[in-house]
Image 1 (cartoon, rainbow, N blue to C red):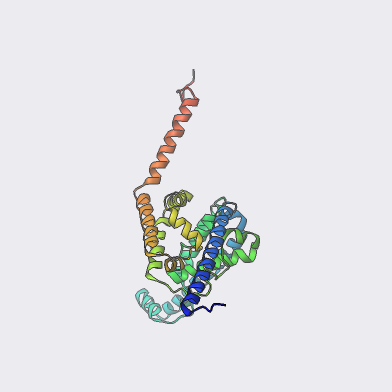
Image 2: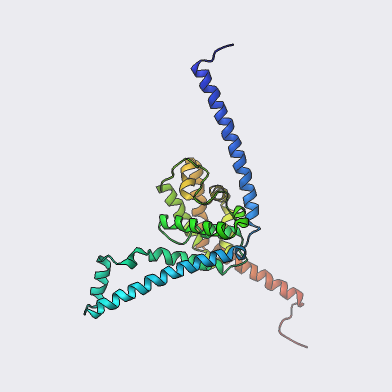
Length: 284
C-alpha cells in the first residue's frame, strides 16, 4: 500500500473539510428557505401573551425607576436643595435607581408596544423589532435575547417557525463574536430604515425586502445578528449589503412610499368613479 506523504495527506484533509463545509452550507440554505416561508405563517397575535408579559416587566422596571428617583428627589428637596443642585447630586451620586438603564428600558418598551399594536403583522415584523429599540449595541442584543426567550418559553411551537437558532446560539457555535465597527455600521444602516416603520408601518419592511435582496437573505441566515453577519461576509458582499441598506434609506427619506401611497389612492379613486359611471355626489 502506498504511503501518503504529508502534502498528500493535507490535500485529502482539505478536500474533506471543503466537502463537509459545502454540505453544511446546503443544510443552512435549506433551513433558511424553510424559515422564510414559516415566518409568513406566524402573526404577532400568536405570540402576544409572551410579548405582553415581557412588556409588563419593562413597565414594572420603568415604574420602579421613576418611583425610586422621585423619592430621592423629594428627600433632597426637603434638605433645601435647588432643582439644579438635585440634578447635579443625582448625576454625580450612586443611587440604587441608577442601576436601571432607563433609556434602554424605555426604548424596549416603546418598540414592543408598537409591535403589539399590529396583531396581524407577520413573523418578519417580530424578528425585525428585535433589532430596533435600544441604540446601544449591548442593550439591543439583550432585547433580542429577551424576546426570543419569552417566545420560546411561552410559545415553543411557534419559536422554530421564527428563528433558525436557539437562544444565545449562532451559526458559528464555537466562534466568539465581538462587537465590531462593521457590525455597528450594519446596525446603524438598518436603524435608518427601521425608523420609517413608525411612519409607513409594514410597508417600509416590505420595501426593504423587495429592494435589498442580499441583505434580506443574510439577515435571515444570521437571525439578524449584525456582528455575526459582518464577521462572516467577505468584503464585497458586506459592501453590497451596506449599499442596499443605504439606498433603501435614501428612497424612504425621499418619500418613495408616500408617492406609492398617492398613486394607489389615485387608482382607487379612478376605480370608484368608473363604478359610479363618472358621477359622484349627485342624485337625479
